[in-house]
Image (cartoon, rainbow, N blue to C red):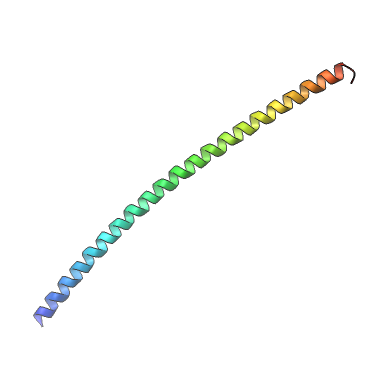
Amino acid sequence: MDARLVDLRETATGNKAFLDGHVSSMECVSTDAKRKWHEFSMKAEDNAKDVADYSSAKHCRMESLLQQWYVKSSASGG
């Protein structure tokens, strides 16, 4: 009976060590995934801001050109 208990204890200890290693590995994977997601979201945010800034500048430029055309057109009587 004692041998069976010792064997059971050794098996349980081995299983616990395996699970502890697996949990530690999963924590590393989870931490890495969070870091990569944060980097990705920051880049996406920066890209969206860049596109918005570009679109805004383009819109202002087109509005300015339209205003110049209108002023010239009005001055020439056209």
